[in-house]
Length: 78
Length: 278
Ligand code: SF4
Ligand code: SF4
Ligand code: SF4
Ligand code: SF4
Ligand code: SF4
Image (cartoon, rainbow over all chains, first blue to last red; front, side, top):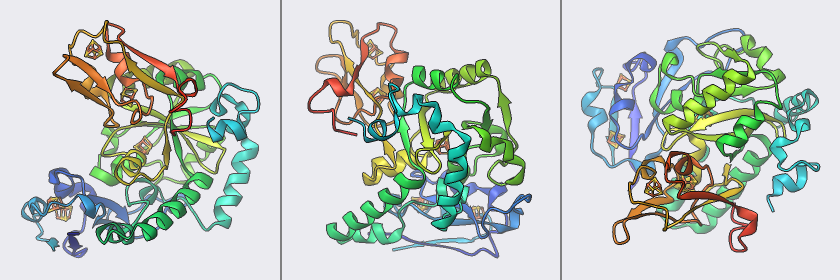
């Protein structure tokens, strides 16, 4: 069964420096990206980084990411 | 025969030894080609945010092989035209450093995306060629800056990264323009992950296949942790390393770690059943 992973971007406001869920996920399911493309002459502001479920095929449903998140921003359901 | 050598080697031993494939002229062509495809390279996307999306995983869940095959084919076609990699050995990578200048160490987009690796820990990727002079235009692609290396420094860096256990791969940015000299591992390299988990050939096997000499192997198991491609295991029955040569990507990492010289790299082309397994 494929997991559905949702992240509340308001709560997860600086995933680049937090990255707790990325580090704890045993199968590296989650991914970090930005909600803007690469911009010329400008580094993307941390507020534009987003955390998402990506490699759903490897999610075991262990809920480690949910438990570790200090902002209560991530939800995993089946 | 490797189709890339067939098309782009122009008499050189391998297509990635042909200096023309690193040339500035191609760099310009690829830029136009990429823009025409609407494929402005977002490093985060290219790295970890999945070459195949949830659609593919859903098709796999319902055993819809037809849809899977179609999506695989589409992903491969896009990848082969714009951005794909081939495994090369450390020796081959060292040779590349004498063909193209400049070479620079940069932060790895895959690992930024997969584990949010901070820039200072993330200098594992190498960019090559004239495109590197434009790094200041794209601060996001080159987060953390770039370190331009002399050919000797590049060799030293590659050797260290290999020692650490990272596989050398060469990558196109607008095929056949070669601009990436990557140092990769499972599960945090998008290329390796995609080819191993989904069988989508965004990363091609290299020109060699590793082979264990059972006479020389003393069963120390030092090599076993080196394989990033699930090709190498330890066979307790015979107390020897075991290589599945059909799975082997020919990176040579196992061989460089074996002090008994029990692992040799054989030309893929010399093995009838493997000559066309890429
Ligand atoms: S539930 Fe477990 S396996 Fe799934 S994303 Fe969270 S940490 Fe990873
Ligand atoms: S642990 Fe929570 S706040 Fe931190 S990056 Fe993950 S989802 Fe965002
Ligand atoms: S291909 Fe390898 S070095 Fe290049 S960005 Fe991906 S993991 Fe990093
Ligand atoms: S490192 Fe060499 S000797 Fe040791 S198990 Fe591997 S092949 Fe055998
Ligand atoms: S068996 Fe050796 S050469 Fe083959 S993929 Fe594994 S580490 Fe690389």
